[in-house]
Image (tube, rainbow, N blue to C red; front, side, top):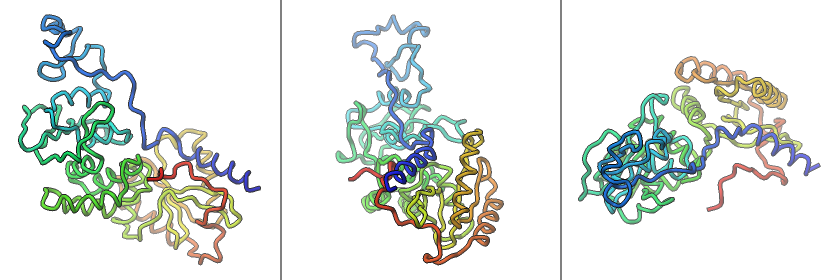
Length: 347
């Protein structure tokens, strides 16, 4: 029986954790590092033909067929501007390390962000719209080579990204998604901030990190949780914690769980409109309700109407059972067979 519960539970969890929303991504193959004119091939004559070569920085070219819209390729191309002791930082360092949701775009994908480059106080780069240059101090311990690219360590990259956004929600989302990609933990980021006393943006970074968690899985989940805490003024929920029946069967892993009230909140993105996913969502909702958990859902686009979402949250919380632990048909106690495939790697 224990084995069947384990197999069935993990199968359900893996089905719910649709791989298209994985917070980690593999760096694409076939990235092309730019070549410098005058150091062999191409020659100055070769690059005069834009049909064959595309300039990415002064004196640096890639073959014209190379797709510069791929975010990792764009990072590689702009990294050639770095001095000997400089590094890619911010969102670009995090993306290069495999964090999915740092895609180098803003405003719903309409704006392409410049690649952040830290060059240190003694260096300077010619301004260019493709890059954002920082001359703030760069320490040796903040610098490392990742896949052949000079990058800031995750804590420094995330610190720079938090300050770039200047937004509480966007900043918290950045920390949550770096943690989801297993590049850093919130505790590690919190420990990093005292080293930045006196730097621009530290008070904002402290507010951001105070609201961040290790357990969010996507930006909309973070936005929904912040709506719950900041707009609805409700106690911080648990996120993506496995819930079981008192008999030890896996029920689900809700985006948001109010343990005291017995309330589950879910965010349904665009892929939830697909027939198979909608059927699975309804079965999932019924399973939660069958075990005494009240349920509400926020769908894509609704987080822009925060007052409406807040009303739904409060109404669902009023409907919830508010049962004491000894009367609940559900529990957070993990059965002996449970092995979470999404658990954070040790260390």
